[in-house]
Length: 427
Ligand code: GLV
Ligand code: MN
Ligand code: MN
Image 1 (tube, rainbow, N blue to C red):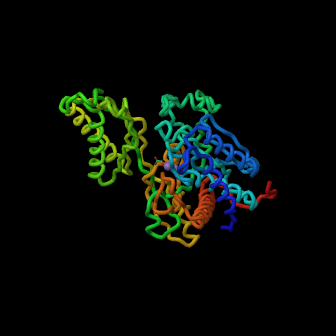
Image 2 (spheres, rainbow, N blue to C red):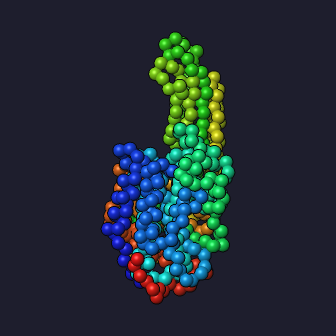
C-alpha cells in the first residue's frame, strides 16, 4: 500500500469555511434547504470543481462529485456524509465526513493514483431530520426507500418538504430519479465523529463501526382543554402539559429499564402557549433507538400504552404518529476488515464500536454494503456547539479513511488493480 499525502491545511480550512455557513450565534445551525445550507453546498461544489471533479446535484439536492476520466469500468465506490446540522450543533458532525471524502478523492488524484474502481463523493442533503423531523432524506432517496408521502413532511413553520425542495430550485416530483442502481454501486464508506466517549476512554484516535442502531421517530399529541389559569379549580382541569410531563417521565423509565434502548423527547410545543391559559394541547417528538430492533419496538409499544393510560387518568387524549422506523444495520464484514487493516497499518489496535447515532450509512445499507470509521471527539460531546476534534485525530482519521477506501475497493470482486495514472495532473 503506497503512502498518499493528504493536505491537512486544506482539510482544516474547509471545515472552518463550512462552520461559517450557519444561522444564529451558538454553534452550527444549518437546516436543510435554508440559505446557509445553500451557501455550504455552493462551497462544496466549488471545491469539487476546483479539484477537477465533475459535479451533479440530484433531485433531492445531494451533491455528487467524481473524476470523469476513470478509464476502468465497474461499479462506483461511494464515500461521503451529510451537510445539514441539528439546531446549535457542532462543526464536525457530517462535515468532517464530507471534507474527508473530498480530501481522499483529491489526494488520490493529485498523487496520480488510478483507483481499482471509480470513486465518487456523495454529500447528502438531510441526515439529521432536524427540519422535517423525518430523517436520512438524501440517502433514502439514493437508496430508493424515500416514499412519496415523505414529501408531505412539514417543518415547524408548516412548509412541506416538497415546497422546500421547489423553493430550493429542485423538482420534488422527480425524487425517484435520485435512486441509484445497486448493480452500479460497489459500496459506501463514511468517516464520522464518534459522538460518544468510547474512543476517548480507550485512548484511541479512531475505530471501526460494527453496526448502527435502528430508530423509531414519532410525533405525539396530548389533547386536553384550555381554560382560564385563574378560575378553573385544580381538580377540574384537563391540563395537556401536566399529562405530557408524566408521559415524558414514563419514556425515561421505559428506556432505563431496557438493557439496550435509549429514548428521548426532544421537542415540545405547548398550545396556546400563554402564561395565563391552561395548556390545551401539547405536541412533541419521541425518538427511540436500539441495536436490538425487537427490543426497540417493544419499548416503543410500552411507552405508547403507558401514555394512553396516563392520558385516560387525566381525561386527556394521546396519539402518536410514527414518522420513521429504520431497522438496525450491521456493517459489511469486508468493509470492516478494510477499516481494521488500515487502522492496524497506522499503528493502532482496531476497536469495533456500535453506533448509537444514526448515519446516512443506515439508509445506504438498503442499496449496498456499508462501512464506517469513527474519529474520537472531545468528551464524546456532539449535537452541541462545543463538539471538537483534535487536528491530530482528524489527520489520522482522514489518512486511515483513505487507506481503508483503497483496501475496500481493492477487495471488491469487480476491482481492477490499483495503480498510477498516465496523465496525473493537478488541475
Ligand atoms: C443523527 O445524528 C441522529 O442520530 O439522529
Ligand atoms: Mn451525523
Ligand atoms: Mn447528527
